[in-house]
Image (cartoon, rainbow, N blue to C red; front, side, top):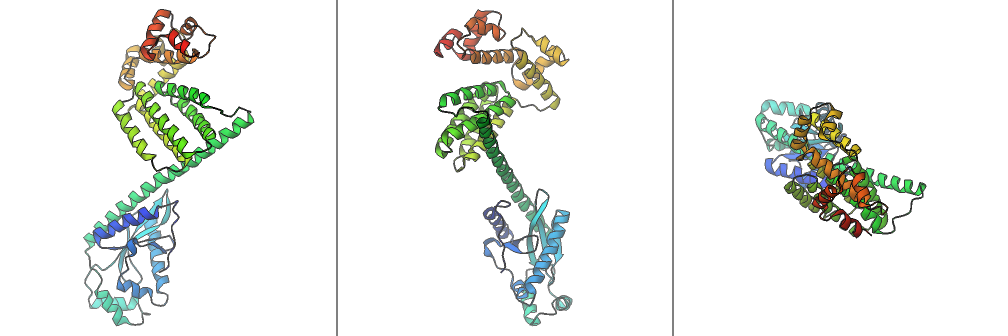
Length: 425
């Protein structure tokens, strides 16, 4: 039997054979996968074709005629993007289910090779006309009598079921292709950032101190639900990790697991549902167990971080999403000023009560809570600069009263500003 292999970048051959094999076992129908030229590339479990089909293919030009029938059927199935019923050149009932990836046809799944009525005198007359070149027509008649006869209703049901199976295989494959594309993009981003650092003559990462400082900044953006800065900092973190570990898989895996855990806690602190975040983290840990490429680790951590951020900032109404996002942006840009709920509402041209309600409903916190969180996070960053006193930090982030700043800081961080500042040096 002539076969061609299928590029595993398009469809996973093992999963294809497993799925089609299950369909065969459930229905008892012959099934095979063909490319756009009508050439078979997979017969699940190597199940043999019917005696009738094997005999036809052994005739002069038989293999070519079968391929031509399959090729025409595959073309029609792709054109209509649904199961296509036809009679092959030898007279059997067959249907083709198209394999479509992003609008392109890879071929079809061929099923059937059956009859829809019991062979009779008229059938044999037609069979003889269709198969003039067959060497021994009586033998062909005997083999035709062994063909399975199924009703039109059963054949339609089988075609519909097969269509569902093929769509499932294709959908799974599209997700894999998107992951491959994203991994390639990840590789390119790392390469471009490394080249950019060399052009700007930035020093290489010599120890984890710089990495950990950047990591703390990243976690701060997560707590604030700042998607843009979080993603930018994450990309820089991954480049640091890649250059520091020289691509060592076990070290990268350990750091990625650690980063995912820290990010999950920051997301919960930012307002995400703790139960959901812990469930996502558990699934993430399972997903990365069998990974053997650094870029795929990076792709997975970017995906889970995006999911965590969505947990912080999940909005059903797009209009509400825009309003709350604009409010957050205004606060991030003006936290050092003595702003109030009224100031934010006036900037957005809506009432303070409406804005407050949206914040409570969508972010599960008040505007003042969010403003305070931003100010404390900014204070933590400024305190890393020894030239600033606690009083100066307090004023720089918008607190007019230093004692109130100390009270709020201790509530969020767990220690007073002075103790925290002294611990840094």
